[in-house]
Amino acid sequence: MTQLAEAARRVPLNRDRVLRAAITLADQVGIESLSMRRLALELGVVPMALYKHVANKEELLGGMVDTIVGEIDPPVPDAPWKSAVRFRVLSARQVLLRHSWARPVIETRTNVTPAVLGYMDGFAGMFLAGGFSADLTHHVMHAMGSRMWGFTQEVFDDTAGRDENQRPEVTPEVRAAMAQQMAERYPNLLSIAGAAAHDDGSVVGSGCDDQFEFEFALDLLLDGFERLHQEKWTSGADGYRGL
Image (cartoon, rainbow, N blue to C red; front, side, top):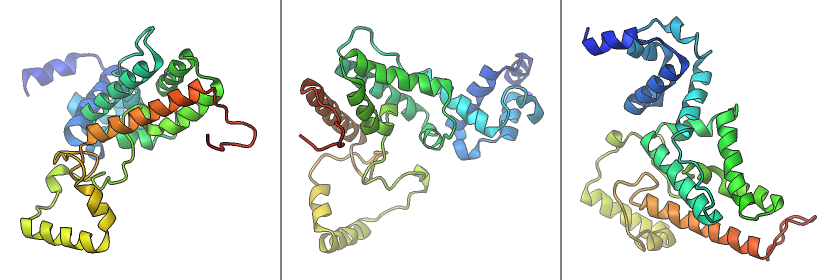
């Protein structure tokens, strides 16, 4: 046994250490491979020792989310609402890019923890501090959806849950045949596919520049919110009727 492992065993086990070890393990092996037994092995303890600090796997996952929420930069004091929101969303995005397992965990949480509620409260607070009405802020939060966490379900996202190393190799001949089929069956999609710069390493969609697309949509939303705020828009008794 290495000296590092022996030293780790001597560090008293507590909830924070368990959660941070779980995050590190998930970063390394993926959330699917994270188990209480494997985590215990990494910490050099028996699995039952973990249950003194987390009741079950669900509580472990919730605690992991709470911990990485703490990595998101806090709101910038006295900043204009639009730049404050943009800064915080992009900070959240960087956190989720560091912890790629976090997106599906956040999406599937059934119990909203105080840390998550605190983040959402602070997020709404940036709009309210910018002079938005409670009514408009309510609809803004719906419109932002998961984007407030730095991710969104993209229209061309065909990579979710797929291991980068498991993607099949595509030869030039196969790619050409696929392009021909696209031209015949889906001419409109083909025409827009080549209309912008592409990034082969994208996590949004095949070849799309995911960071650009995310910021583009975020800025569209923020500009729209600003226009509604300036026009003192309200939802009205009959629901949304447009402008």
